[in-house]
Length: 481
Image (cartoon, rainbow, N blue to C red; front, side, top):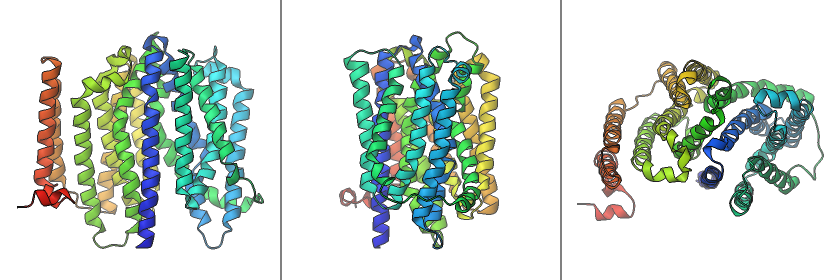
């Protein structure tokens, strides 16, 4: 019981810190889109650069976070040697990457379309190199059960970043998008100093044989990570090369800003993951675990559909989170949110191959989804612009989700409540269709009123069928017959 309580406590700390952190970072979107007009292309540059950063971070860490956890808990290995070897490996690769980017800055910045601003490229390269190295000390904090320190440093970094951005972009009325990258570098450097006790004060040791063994474990994780992150970022990296209009940065900025509204779904998915993942692996051998997987899937879909309807239903209010000149991209919000729901379902389905230690399936599914996403972008973006990017993500996650379900049923069959899931999906789809049909024909106040009624009706179905109020803690006693 004590161990389970500890797991629950750490899950809450890590989960809340991550979700709060993402929410605070989310607050930069209104700031950037208010100060950087869509026509300036400033937010398009930010969207494009951070897409590269996400991919490069996965490559530079090359699965060593998970590998570190695996090897530091092996009985025949010295955890200190594992830690220092991992630090040296990731640190060396990151340093080489940063040095190569700086040395070849001119051709790289020209290739990326930033020949007039090479500083954008080298600043972000140095930042992501430091970030990759710091992933290992942060993993060490988790391994040492220092959840409070982990969460405090993560949140401090974000709070300082927001304050510096507010000072420059709001108080000083700054317009130079480069300062977003300079601030990021400054905050990352601050983290490196605050974490110095995690990579100082001990004897550094490098074990080449150990590293080779670790790399044999980490490479499938790297492949899976690359495929997974490309599903999220490939469209934003490809867009500048395949969109044929002269307003490329403007269009990419509009897409990036409106996609951020849909990231509410990503936060819900992440919260579910932090709560659900430890439970799954802690109870692999429990007899009633199959039923838990099946019911968890149903409730995940129910509540993400509810979140979908709430965002779509109040989109005319939520749109004020971004600048008015970005509103032309709001039509992608439902598409991106639907893609995020399928990504969450795919995440839930992924446990079958993790439980039977066949993670290579994850690489195949994610890779297939990525290929579909890239194909849709290459074929349709030249004609339909960023809307095709949204549909590419929808198609990619949809294919990965369907493939994982059917193949999973062969290797690890589960009796998911498909009838219930289909019912809720059809009700949500009908409510969404009504919202979209009436949106342009009714006054705003009446449209919001109708949407509220539809959301309440969907919630009433949930309560009636699957969440009886009489069974809830505290308030349940007021609803008992």
